Amino acid sequence: MRRPSARRITALVTAGLLLPALAACGSDNDKGGSADGGDSTLVIYSGRNEKLVKPILDKLEKAVGSKVEVRYGDSAELAAQILEEGDRTKAGLFFSQDAGALGALSKEGMLAKLPQSSLDEVDPAYRGGAGDWVGLSGRVRVIAYNPDQVTEDEVPDSVHDVVKPEWKGKVGFAPTNASFQAFVTGMRVLDGDDATREWLKSLKASGKTYANNLATLDAVESGEVSLGLVNHYYWYERVAEKGEDKVNAKLHFLPGKDPGALINVAGVGILKDGGQTATAQKAVDYLLSEEAQTYFADKTKEYPLAAGVTSSVEGLPSFGSLNAPDIDLGKLESLQETLAMLQDVGLV
Image (cartoon, rainbow, N blue to C red; front, side):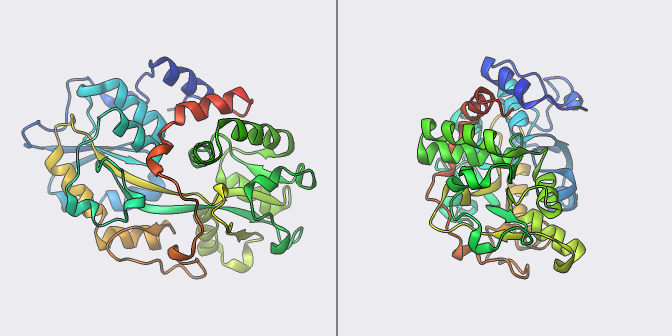
């Protein structure tokens, strides 16, 4: 199904009238289980890309002991759909691409409190303050650069500097990408709306837009742009596929707790009205297990957040060495305002 544009999503979310994003959702009365814990099918709304997570979600049926049905889509769209469905939601578990969508559901009281044993698997910085969602894997924003055009010493150490005159026409970014939008939300939290709006205006005037992170990385590799604002794991996946000597791009990890070094998380929350609480909790425990965490580390090239698992990806900086800004990830829930700002400056 063709997804609505970001502009359309913004208008619908703002109006509170977002229609179901997935035609396959069925009737409002068709739930995967019963409220008393007699779960039969676990229905997962997954904002994570099917190609990335299907292999690990395919293992859930054995892990939870019941049938698992996964419905893929955009995290923001799926969160809006859950809010539209309310207590009629068919989702038992929401697997979000970013903390913002989980925060939005938490704010509206849609998520169930998780057991402390599950929460304790993850550092408090990467779980919901209300104890109703938990991060599974982390990714950091970085600047990809073309070493044929710039040296690493020449790459800006702050995302604020990529809009300086010397970089005009040389910076690529993907404004409709969920990770970029989460980063902009983080900048709004850290720097305020006025400063963020002015930065976006400058970026629009001086940068080049692309459909997604992969297209942005392609543009850096080809030399179409010198710099690209992306997530770290796209580069590491490409290196794993082709070999580092075949990838004509490098990564610059930003120092100094810059907004451009945001660490966002993919995470999960149990829908309190989904009628699948017992099975959904088993799924949460499995996704926090060593097997699942190792999958995120080795296969998706992200940072595992639980079970004491560390990444084995060659050349990836340790998680503890990253200089991410100090931010409550739950505050990334104001995606609606970010989309409105992006629309206002003409980027979506």
